[in-house]
Image 1 (cartoon, helix red, strand yellow):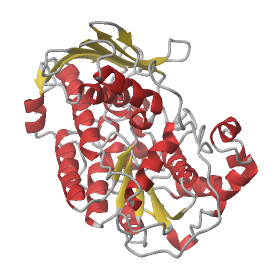
Image 2: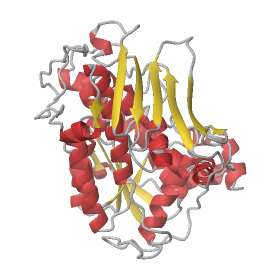
Image 3: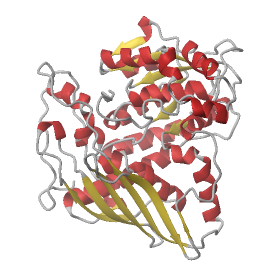
Length: 446
């Protein structure tokens, strides 16, 4: 359940910053089964579900964040993806080439020691490598304490629910669903996790980044006066995981190998990528929008199988309960076009980009995993990002549906929606038709 990675960089740029945090390999204590919050410094046993660039990066970030963590099991629907990930995690050259400059900046530890520490805590044996659509259940049953959920987002609600039911602490990638039914399923599981004090950290790394944290606090303290207007922009390149369809692939395998082109599994760009910048606005406002109007379409993506049924650009106007508007723009245009990801906040006494009043801290991809471990062990306040990432995901789904339908969509409408995009069965050769590209006024919001 992972991208091919051959045509585009992943969220973590395939471990671009993965050796940032510092970790030693010595001093492990005996594993305590069913580790509970506040149980001490026992070694945490981790399982990885989804072994593409995201999953591989998340595993290294976690192993970098804390020396008392080991990766013991892995699962994916594709054996080639799992084996490539495992080989990378065990390859000293691969780890050494990740990002040496961050080692001196944050740890002072020689790169060789840091990389070797990560490598030696990957203890995944052949019997702990699980392949298939039920691989996540086997990972959850492999004696782990914490699971990294890094598959494409269409699978997130079911897998998150299963992880909570299994009593595991969770790192979940964003977004957490591609449709309202899945988002509500995820939210129900979040409440169960809260009741059981299971830690949940989401891959919205800005919430772990010191520059953003400090700037948000200063804005809330009145540094730029009352917030009057927000903007969020995500201008990037196209995401294509493969460049052709192998004749041996059935429809379901094809759509998984090229998952970013299909709405049911990726959610379109507003949901899958732009969620970062929109989540920042929700975080700053301490709430979610109540309505949105939007537009979008396809300017350059060919109407071919490779490009699926997603848009290549969207704009939206979200309205928060206090009347503040969020102007949102996202697009995925070909090489040579302008690229930038940013936020802007306009206040009655000044402006901010969300980072300009903060100081530099630890790599946020490592810091989010420190938050995870510290909460699990009771070294910090209990952490559960589940409802926040769910509300930001739903905000983005609301924007997508407004663009697809040409309607104004309210929060109440999206929360009552019966839209369920997920297949009812999963088989590699399963025949799957691709719904047509959404056309406003013809597309029906449900």
